[in-house]
Image (cartoon, rainbow, N blue to C red; front, side, top):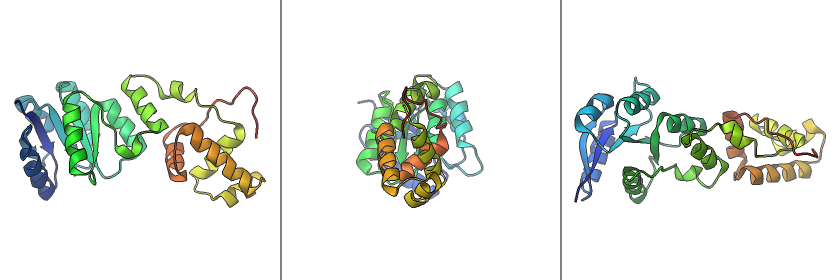
Length: 226
């Protein structure tokens, strides 16, 4: 059985050696090289790995540029980024650069191996915390080469809901928002609930992150309401 050829780029020596040992213990995976000096492009040319497993926070290097250059010179490589919890905006940038998958550093061994195997077969793998939300649709759209604005044009928000989003983005509480907009606190809660449902998000934190990462000037419905 042919083994999945993996090139590991990780500047933490302990992590690098641990990941290498863990992957080489699998019957269908082989780390063809592990390095911490960021020479991914040169090694990819020589070793032709199926998967390039790379830390997002390489010291003294721009990981996004490494990915971009790697995909230009070696488009066949399936790049997987490792990080703790990447910001939504970062994920979009890396997806556009050609990254095929993400592994959170607190992932289980099963998830870690599943991601590598899936990516090697051409499957795109998002961080688990970012699936089942509007953000996963945005990333899918980015992968298809479309514009995010086209996707966002389908999400209808009232002017009051947009006001609430803007205040949440600044970290204000429901009470503070109610005072600012001169409405009842329970009305603010209702708006927040509706907004989260429309965006398929789950928490105020996700909404605040979303507001910071994207243009939130949504089109209003035909009859704008409070």
